[in-house]
Each structure stands twice: as structure tokens, then as C-alpha cells.
Image (cartoon, rainbow, N blue to C red; front, side, top):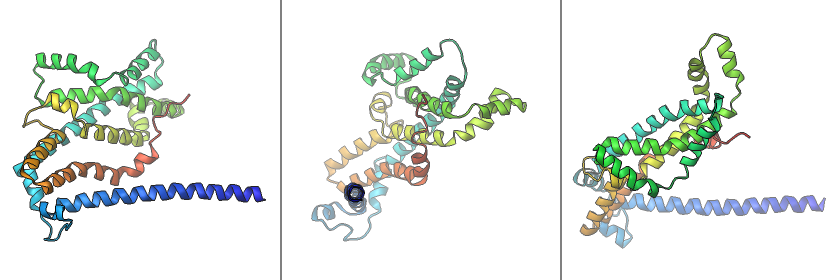
Length: 283
């Protein structure tokens, strides 16, 4: 009896310590985000004097960053890159992963191994060859060049992730559909895709966040005002506003960059958590 009581107290103590640590970390994050948000609506003088929002809410900080500093254009460019790239990855990776998880053909393990190996290739190894190739093809400083890099770069992980998910689904579902007269493609489209919705959403969120925060390839491929991404544009804005001493504008730009990530997690957090292990490999 005493041993069970001691074990129970130990579990309660461990959980209490974990909750306290998580609670303190959450409070820190909420305070930090709240301070940045309040600073974005304040003046630079109020930020340095510690009197945030003392003179009211200054929406002109956002208006100036979006218009004068062209952050609205960069925001639109990043949305275009992310949307087209995420869609392109799903169109290419979903049928490929389904075929690798279901079809039996010679060289299947070799093809799967190529995708797995593709995840381990360092970016710096591909930088010079791709830059030279894209320069000869005239794809530097264009939407198409960066889109190709994003889509092709995300394919290996996406195929690996979805292959594991499709492998975990029972084959009886497809067999029943085929017995009812459906073709293999119809079984994939009508049966398997709806079942994979959660995994597809989770993968899309991962890829979106990766594309949204990507900096290196955007700097190399589209170092042009008309095609510049938000991450590159924000650096330009920060450099400009540091010279002007406009720290309120800097915080406004940071909030603008953070908004899409926050919206994604607010609306898709439940699906992300429930499908976080959707791509686990079934041995």
C-alpha cells in the first residue's frame, strides 16, 4: 500500500513539475508576443520609455510598412509562392507515394531509397549546380525558378511522409471498390484521398511553414523587387527603418510576417495534432 502511494505521489510530482515548466514557458511566450504586438501599435518613443500605447493606437505603422516599404507586394508574392508550391507538391507527391506504397514492381525499394536519400542532400551541395543551370535557362529573378526549387525540394520528404500513411491503410478498402467495378484510379481518388485528408492537411501545413520562412533560395533566385518574398523584403524594411530609427515600424513588419503562421495553427491545430504521426512507417 505504501509503495503504491509513493508511486502515485511521484507521478503527481512529475506531472506538476512538467505543467509548471510548460505554464511558465507559455506565459513567457504570451508576454513576448503581447509586447511585440503592443509595440507595433505604439510610437518609437513609447517603446523606449516603456509607455506602450500611451498616445493611442497608431495604425499608420502598418500602413507605412505595407505601402511605403512595399511589404504588401512582398506579402502577396510569398502567398503566391506558398500556394502554388504546396499545390504542386500535393499533385506530384500524392500519386507517387500511393504507387510506392501499393504497387509491386521491380526496383520499388530502389526508388523509395532515392526519395529517402534526397532528404539527406545538403542545400549547399546543390546551390552552385542549380544556380548555373537556372542562369542558363533564364529562370533567375523569376517566379518559375523559385517555384521549381520549392516544389522539387519538398518532394522527397512529402513522398516519404505520405508513403508511410498510405501503407498504414488497409488494402481491403481498394479491393472492395475494385470488386464493385471501380478502376484503380477511381479507388485512389474516391476512397484513398478522402481517407488521407488529414495527412494531406498536415503535410501542407509543414510545407507552407517551410516555404513561408525560407530565406536562402529566395535571396539567390529572386533578388528582385518585383518578385521578392516577404522574408527578403522584411530584411530590407528592417535595415531601412533602423537607419530611420523607426522601431515601431519594425515590429509592425514582424507581426505581418507572423500572421499567416498564427492563422494556420488556430484553424488547423486539431488536424495537425491528430495526424502528426500519419507518416510513420509501418514495419
